[in-house]
Image (cartoon, rainbow, N blue to C red):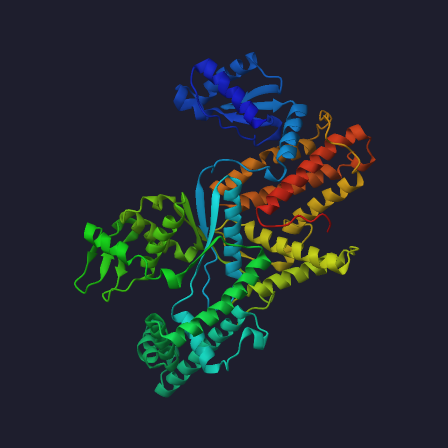
Amino acid sequence: MRNKLASFIKDTIKNKFDVDTDINIEIPALAEHGDFSLPCFQFSKLLKKAPVTIANDLKVALEENKNDFIQEINNVGPYLNFRIDKNSYFSEVFKQIMDQKENYGNTESGKDKSVMVEFSSPNTNKPLHLGHVRNNLLGDAISKLHQACGYKVIKANLLNDRGIHICKAMFAWKEFGNNETPESSGIKGDHLVGKYYVTFEKKLKEEQDKFIQDKNVDLASMEERDRDKFIEEEFYPNSYYLKSARELLLKWEAGELDTIELWKKMNAWVFKGFQETYKALGISFDKYYYESHTYKLGKDIVLKGLESGVCYQKEDGSIWLTLPKKGFGNDKILLRKDGTSVYITQDIGTAFLKYQDYKMNKSINVVGSEQEYHFQVLFKALELLGFEEYRGCYHLSYGMIYLPEGKMKSREGKVVDADELIIEMVEKAKEEIISRNRPFTGEELSSISNIVGLGALKYYVLQYSAKTDFTFDPKASIDFNGKTGPYIQYTHARICSLLRQVSDVDLSEKIDFSGLNSQEDNNLLKLLEQFPYIVEKACINYNTSILAEYLYDTASAFNSFYSRADNRIKDMDTERQKPRLALAVSCKQVINNGLALFGISSPEQM
């Protein structure tokens, strides 16, 4: 209907003003103004007239050739508002949803384009935690939104599988592990490796405390800067544990066989553990990159930058990139004086490698907000080093996620484990479902609890825009009556229950929608029509909260429509049932499609 209206307006403008232009149609802020609105500001520059004058002239021209589906045209200042014949409007929306079904909401704005979304990217020395949960859910949803908009999507994961942090866990296992394995201990592989990383840090702290005591130093009386200096200059060079971890790193970089074998074994444990967590979250990847493969990339690119004059070399042999003073301040070192790469140099090389692999139009990095400056420098470095495709690079920065004190278990009182979080959410969902006395078998209860628990977690996280810091409240997220995933899932199940009770009603023949004229009917209709535009808006803005808000509004609109005293669909005659059931079926499809973009299942009973 929106396209039909846009086409009609476009043809009228062409005939009236002899210009060809795109048409932007909006939904009026106030329902009493109409069904659609045309802001005439968009034509002001083209027609060299005031928007109010354009609105007046265009109204006259449109009314002269008014199409059958338009009931009324009125202008409010620079806006032209249209009231549409409801029978035509409902019929168009219902037909489109029924024709497209699970594809309703999809657009072609990204047709013939590709995008790589890199997310998760964990260190292989510990299990995934609450922060990773947000990263994974955000990256997966952004991938699905781009896919719905016609892009070819590559979901990538860059595993940080090398470095001193990995060697700390390796050394602790060698020192204290007694050949413990996931099989011998019954501990999930990533948790087992994480256990030894924690062991290393604990032993290092004990060693540090003893060193300070032996030196008879009162750190509490020192300024923070002096305390840090003492630890770095006095303790670190004398630490048995740090020295041992560094020796392992040197052996790894030298390719020492036993060290490489231990590294491969412990990484394999972690990878297997990660895969189990990803599977539980419903997350998958198309491509894995490994820092152990990419950490040397970028050096040749930097040396070419030195030849071209983009980079310069200092007297000590280090190589630097000249950055604009405005917005960056200092220049950036890319190669140390010994010729080794810094972290951003690896990222430069990886950016080239990813483009070489996929030639994508866009490259999105889902990384926490603490890395914003790093990505600003990286994208500027790519530009200066001649990587034209850098313009398609985007840092999807996200904020912190917290838990209320005492709500859930955490590792060492600091990090909330992702596996524990998933289990806890499923258990909370099960408790809520049992409290409602639902007549489910044990197998049904287990399945539905898993769907509702994960739905609660995913919706709660994705209802916030990426940069927003928030506290995740597990209890509030499960509420069947709040602004939650389970509320939207329950609405879907409620529609399914209705449809089962009137399954003999045939909706395939022409339906008369003219009787749907209440405010609740119109509110729901308009929301269903907007779904493709919401999906595209959420994609363009990298903002899952737009879709989350829409899904809640749609579920609420259906419940208002269904709860009206004069709208007892089950008790109506068939002809009055049909248009209302058509609206219910359409809403069920839209909720299903919208939740699927968040990786959330839509249960048929709850």
